[in-house]
Image (cartoon, rainbow, N blue to C red):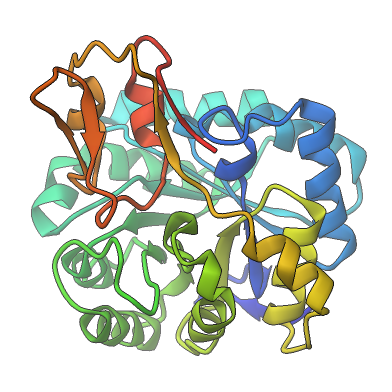
Length: 317
């Protein structure tokens, strides 16, 4: 496994980052021992970087992993939708408490869209800056699906880490092309920002072309790491090999390529629209029958709609 420094943070991360969303309650909802076992296997294969968020509900998995692999220097990145100083303080304290960790390596403002969004979340950013000064977190950052978000974060000195969406088809990029996003990431890296990518497989939509998709993502030299959601040992093995530039055995390739994910909405959906409001991709809408429907060409299977559904009618499988 290759390791790189994440911008100027001094944090050393594996080229492959484990996206923990996939194993949690919004998606596969694996039993705790099974989810931890898969993450532990990733650690054994050289992965030291794990990406999560308050929304994902995966802190219990990471807490148990950290207890099982004491002595390993694992890097944890989390995110929050907090807007104000006090909201972000509660989010960081929740992460510290539920992870049983005094210091969180990286804490991100979740899904920033532009300079205006950053201004609207300035209170939350101010808390992260203060928390870093106190040694509670090591690095401050943002996640974004927008080219404008990358550009805005690049201009803010206190933001050290940027976690943008990028895949070779551009699926999920909200305001530009693949070329636009790559150019913005290159500029951010040149400015000293630590960049790690998300959604290289378009939330699972590109699994049938995983080789092409992952090779594109790992070829981006401006990115220190690529976060990939994984929920099986075969997926871990596949991604470790690709990240390392090694050949993938055909048996593993076949197993992984058959596991395309999908969004499932129960037939008894009441059409309340809460998920529609929560979807960052504008992929959901309430159809003429009063049930939520999905525009599959826009959906990146993030599962945020599942978190918003008050009746638990939505899952990503």
